[in-house]
Image (cartoon, rainbow, N blue to C red; front, side, top):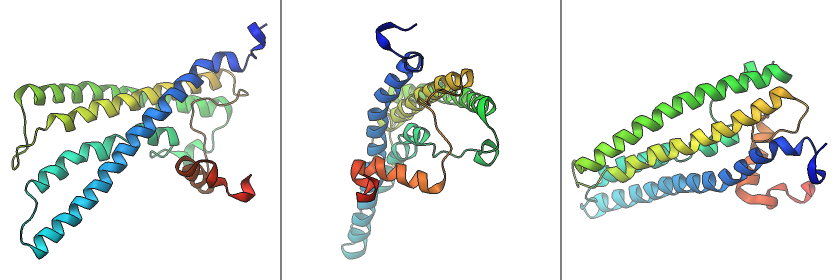
Length: 212
């Protein structure tokens, strides 16, 4: 018997759904920042080529700026990619698993991922603190390095939380595979992945007239 008419399906997954939805805008924003870094680096590269080729006056500290942008480009989109199931996965093997066997494999993968990412959070935070305390700078233009290094533990923390949500969702489905999935990645073919990515980028417009 449930309170206020809440079904047995909805009750245990409510907090998973809430945390999933809370993480989504954070992951989307971090991924947008990573994409912005990539776009600005492309613009910076064009400006560098133009200044060097036509004016013989390259940008000062260009290499330093490229190095500082790497952390944002490489790591800020990790949690978003995890949510979309776009990280490298052993889908040829997972595709043969059904029911509890599949969700057990997801549980093991999530636990291993959380362990690795937790270590990365710990050491990247120490690396940031050391850089901040000694006032570490780039070699050429002497830009401060710590803001770039701070992005690494932040990005890994987002990734850890996403893995925790997927772990909880996988445990729930391992207990009862008949429940509706919440906070987990499901196996999809290439067409489904493309549709999901289009929907993430364009919203309802991505479905087209035939999808309505």
